[in-house]
Length: 153
Image 1 (tube, rainbow, N blue to C red):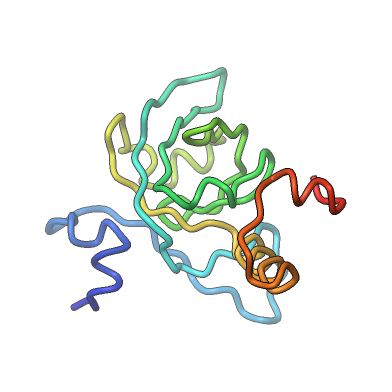
Image 2: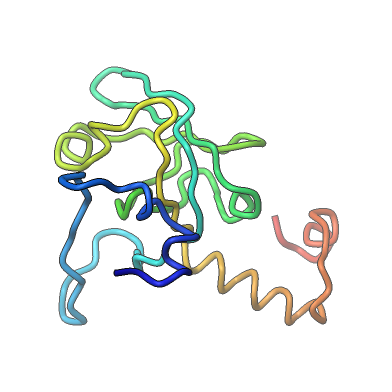
């Protein structure tokens, strides 16, 4: 059973019996951290535009739902299907991820193809930064030029 919020923000309602999902144990406070903070809170559902082999890597070109792209930065962090990944590049309408063989072979990404709907979790630090910037700016929405003029790039 899932609550409405989960069903509306994720691909959970699309799952069928025996559908594969990624599961990972939660990090203990005493564990060494080698990636970024993935909370398991889905921010929206995206879709895969293309999957291409590039040497040993697999490139995923991904559409993001409106309102999530501004949290993305080249070499920044994102989670797809609960998998912590690094963004290879950002385009005006999506992102590209270069997935290493170990990750590709041990996750459900190996079964994903063009058109596959995927859960997106943007970096929590980017969300907090945005929230703090809204407070700093008096809650007003600012455009990119305003941030640049105040020392942000």
